[in-house]
Length: 184
Image (cartoon, rainbow, N blue to C red; front, side, top):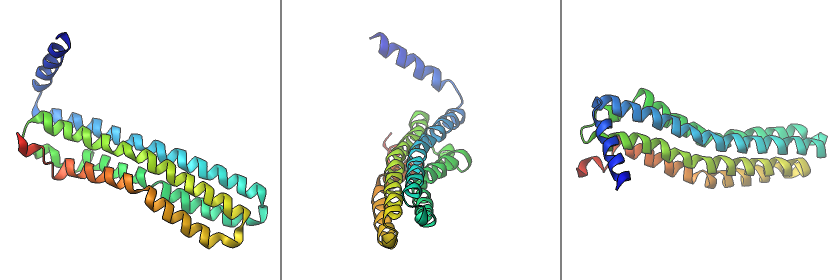
């Protein structure tokens, strides 16, 4: 019972602020939350770079090829971080929620939810980096198969990115076509 009273008091206090200020504050929180997804690409790219160093140490003659594969794979692993950056920038500079009519708490929660959804980009970033690392490792061991390895790596990375794309779709829906706002 005491928890319920606290929540009600908190919501009443929150609603005592200007509507636009609440939405902008929630948007700033959402933008920051979205950038948590940068953890995934950082881990994935670090793994790919480590595998690149291993590949060069195994077979110095394939160093240029292994480095190329590592850089290509690491670039793809960054995509979920880029998607999160786009959502953050929309929330900060082109926020469609500021002028949305409806309950301020729902609009504010939508801004936070848009950012939270982008955290799903951690998985694709790590997965794509893992694929890049393994591709780099194999090119170091078998440079003759570089084209086949790269093709397989890119296909795996594309599949791994799907959850990051789903997260971005949810973030965009929450910002531009929110079905919840019309329900009140």
